Every structure is written in structure tokens, then in C-alpha cells.
Image 1 (tube, rainbow, N blue to C red):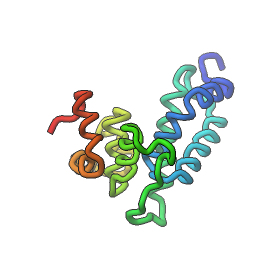
Image 2: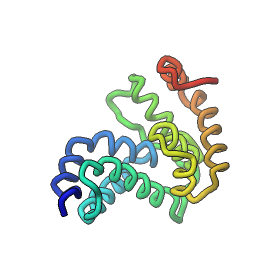
Image 3: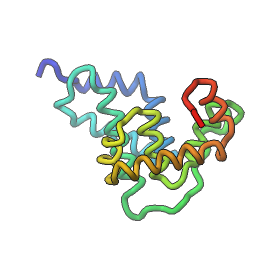
Length: 169
């Protein structure tokens, strides 16, 4: 099976990128327990992946984690607006903490998923719609609503985005 990622390739990826992958799981779910569940499910899925091209284990793992997060958050029973966990108890003054916490607070969950998937992970509207089981129009509306809501959740998110040139009123 030359040309395909091995279990060792996946292990190397998860060791090197466990932090960013867990952060993605947390921002999507807003809860540490659910983020851990998604991360571990993705790790288990990787152990059974035998048809992923070598070098693609990163994009495959992110997509699989997103699918697992969707299933975790949107499967019955779906919780109402639940207060998200704090990202960290030690770094609550940093801009990174503020941005992560603001993203985790986005409600409803569809807005959070659409924003993270389309804006941060660069998934197309079509890909988002397929993965989330909604229409492209729903994706567009959720992204717009999320972008309107974010500044009220934490003004520093807008300040950082304006500095980086990624936010246009």
C-alpha cells in the first residue's frame, strides 16, 4: 500500500498537532468534555483509516474531527444554549483567550460551526451545507449572524480582525 498514510504517519501527526486539533474541537463544541470525546473519536477513526493518501492525514483528521463534532453537538438530545466552558483558567487576559472564548460563546451552535468551518477552516458554503445537513442559504445566514454577534461577545475579536485585515463592517 505504498502512497497511503500509515498508522505511524497518523501518530506523528497527532503528536505534532494535538494542540491545534483539540482547540478546533473545543471551539466547535464549547465544552472540554465534548472536545475530548471528538478528539478521541478522531484518533480512533485514524487507527482504522487505510485509504488516506500519505501527506493528507492532517486535512483528513481535521475533516473527521469536524464530522465527529457535528455528530456530538447536533445529535439528540440537543442541548439548548448552554454556557461554554472557559478555555483556560490561567491565561484569561490574553487576546487569544478572548477570541477563543468569544467563538465558543457563539449561539446557536449552527452559527459557531459555520463561522469556524467557513471563515477559519476555509470550507466552501457548499461543503458546510453538506456536512451540516442544511442549505447554502442557511450557511450564509448563519455566517452573517455570527459575524454580527462576535463583536458583542468580545470587542477584542473585532480589534484583532481589523488589525489583520480580516474583518470588514
